[in-house]
Image (cartoon, rainbow, N blue to C red; front, side):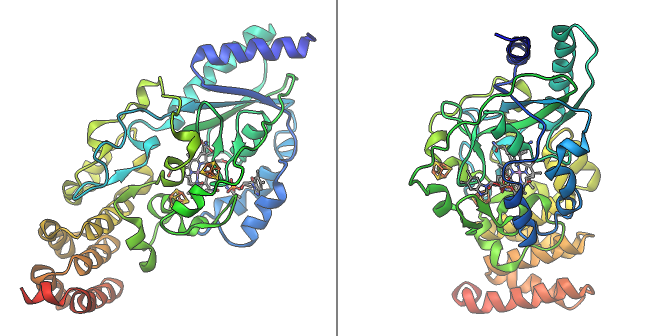
Length: 387
Ligand code: B12
Ligand code: SF4
Ligand code: SF4
């Protein structure tokens, strides 16, 4: 074994000892599928995620962006656990993506990558320049991880490793020392297309190509404005992220369970009661979801999602809370989605509050949603309104 290989092996065992579930080494070079990324941007599939085209040059050329770097350690940390999603998404309960049911992985991975950096210096017997990235950097995490042999691209665009599944998050440590690179794994999707057919919003343009603008994960986390009307119903009870295209994947039948306490699901976020969220103030929201990835949606985005999920529940029990939100919430985005939800539930209570607020609401967007909701009550549930 040459020195580069030996050092790589020692560093990888230190990474496993630190607690990473997947570890590999990649060279610092342009991503193999850089053209696919550029085409994806050209098609506008990134929607409002303007940071992606803005940082495309860095993503496509890590060798220029981090010109001092000579190799990359790619790591993965599993977040799946058997307790997740029990009784999730029924009635007045919502669904939060598995990765977001406890602490934010950016913090967790960031700390471990710092430990890994110290271990690399020890193993190399010298100071090593390094820079860590977790999701937020101008890096194509999946391209690097697949080049490092951690996993392969599934048709659902997630990285998958047999025996592990796809419920893991990724990070990288760029280093100014040379380590022997690993080889990519072969793709094993074969003829399967379960993920493509299961997507409720039909977000896949085809295998390996996702129109993010239709993905529930984008709609509930990244999108800041109103959710397009035609995508609200297929969102079902999702209030933050979505796992459907991973849940149906045969490689996730027995996923590797997380050993990270920070990912063990919080009971109140596994299948959360939706109605109490509607009365959260800005301050309460920040306290309740402190250290959680859900904070990224901000109160207004999250309550918008909660309104949609409550509308989709069809439960009359949700009408009083939605009515109060429509009457009193200070955010027009939230009021607009509360109006939609009332229109979807319909019934006499919903119609009367919609008409009452219609007379005094001043925001044109909310007024338009109310008008559509009143029409929806009349058209879709005339019998309920007549009760
Ligand atoms: C933007 C983004 C999103 C967007 C867009 C998703 C997407 N598919 O790109 C939205 C908000 C929708 C999203 C959702 C999710 N995300 Co996200 N996201 C990112 C982010 C920040 C950038 C991804 C990116 O560059 N997309 C650009 C497009 C072009 O990439 P792509 O779709 O993967 O396309 C590639 C492949 O399709 C491939 N390809 C093209 N043609 C072909 C053909 C063949 C034969 C093959 C093999 C490959 C191939 O080449 C393309 C270019 O690389 C990364 C973090 C990072 N910095 O990289 C996290 C990241 C990808 N997300 C992650 C996660 C966990 C999720 C969710 C599971 C969260 C959730 N539960 O809601 C969902 C999954 C949805 C899905 N089906 O992808 C993880 C993925 C971990 C994994 N195991 O793969 C990452 C890596 C974050 C992290 N650091 O852990 N995400
Ligand atoms: S995360 Fe959900 S909405 Fe997004 S592509 Fe997968 S199944 Fe479709
Ligand atoms: S569900 Fe099938 S096609 Fe989709 S990623 Fe998994 S193996 Fe590949």
